[in-house]
Amino acid sequence: MANPLRRSDAEALDATDPLAAYRERFVITDPDLVYMDGNSLGMAPQAALDAVTRAAATDWAAGLVRSWHHWLDLAVSTGDVLAPLIGTSPGEVVLTDQTSINLYKLASAAVAARDGAVVTDTSNFPSDIYVLRSVASHHSREFRLVDTDHDTGPTPENMGLHVTGAALVSLSHVAFKSGFRADLTALTELAHGGGALMLWDLSHSAGVLPVRLDTSGADLAVGCTYKYLNGGPGSPAFLYVRRDLQQHLEQPIQGWFGHADQFAFETDYRPAPDIRRFATGTPAILSLAAARAGIELTAEATVDAIHDKARRLTTMFITLCGEQLGDLGFDIVTPRGPFARGAHVTLRHAAGYGIARALIDRNVVPDFRAPDLIRFGMSPLTTRYADVWEAAARCAAVVESGGFAPEEPDTSRVT
Image (tube, rainbow, N blue to C red; front, side, top):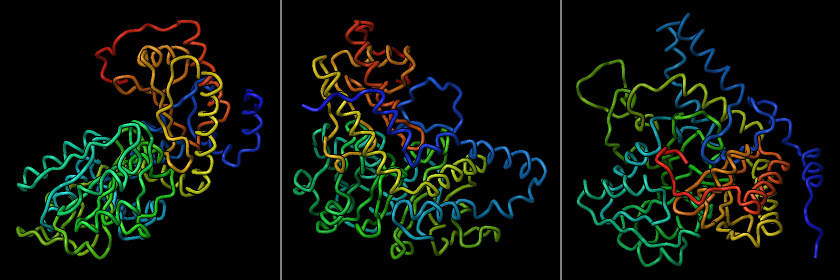
């Protein structure tokens, strides 16, 4: 049997980590904090705070309305920076609105262009399910919610019988609870074989996994920028529309930023001939400035390097869970295979909520998902190997000492 991992082993990995210097470019107010929730909200890059200050103090305060000369195309030019990080080309991505709104726009456009049902699965993010059900209802289409195992997610095997005669299949690339990574290419091919357009939610994979929308043949995608892209709370989401589809889809929320000539102020709507037609209203410039800084930082580090470290961090945590938590009532929900998961590891425990709260009291911040799941998110630009070791060690100490209350989730809403 191999010797158990020691903290010194983790520190040795940190000393040779090629991404270690990136942590210094984030605002760390508490150096002792073990932050394991980057899959919900990434830490703040200093460059993002600087970008917001410039946009507010220089562009807004001094430039005033004149700053729209370089603000007008910021959503599209930032989409061009993001595009290669998700395997697309410039002119196919725009930052706009929020993930649910973008999902509604693209799902509605897809269903209006195709006959058939709307298909998703039970491991998808609930907000996506709500939106997709409403789209099906508004278009008087059948809604198929495929029952998939929450500990895994959608596969060609469990989705195969349900895509025939569909107009749209929409799934999450990485399951928000378990971290299961769906097969982008195989499921896209499955959807196309059933006659459907394929719409992916990349919220838990953009910026941390090598996503190839182009080679997978994906038609549409949405995602957020506040997790692994470190754009800040509520930062603008993004949407992707494959270039050859752009002029064939009519998005339902038509606004002046999607108009072919927005300053002509015409009473009739003429959609822009390109990705801009999927924009709607005036972009949130301050948030967009922060999101761009986070995206540029990720592009500099490269997704391949980030993914390599994510695999190593999650593998270390799973190993430590086996060594330190194996006899303490925990089950590892996340797939063991490094290419079958995203960048968070989920543990199940009957007292999960109480343990999560006790960890926060001990300066370890994971998150809790009802009824019994604790998620540990590894954000490779900020998470150290020593953080992973500490998270497992403190988790074991909490349970062994009984230092947690077996209480039910409170009503604070944020867990």
